[in-house]
Amino acid sequence: MSGSLFVAHIGNPDFHDGTVISVLAKADRVSVVIQGQSGRTYTLDFNGVTRLASNRAEGMTLYAVTEMEAPQPLRRFVFVNWDEKDDASLEVTARGFGISQ
Image (cartoon, rainbow, N blue to C red; front, side, top):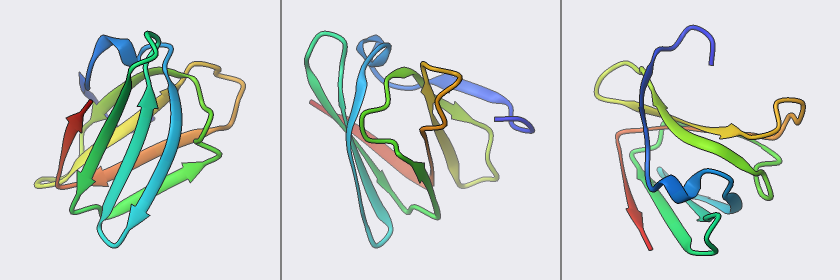
């Protein structure tokens, strides 16, 4: 995350200690399913995706989902891995997003 400034935490606080269940990419859309610490399932739908960087993201325990600075009109989302020693990672740069339960 070096070189980018923090904008905000994204989503429900239940994401903290949650788990990435799946990452589905199709054309310029990406859907990420998270199981929150409570057991609830959330879907983050990104549209206008220009970049998806994923390394063994499925099964990753989250510290948080954050938005980092990006050139307008894009938004950059970083799924922060709870385990700093684990190389699992997920980042999405997109024009927009929505969250559903």
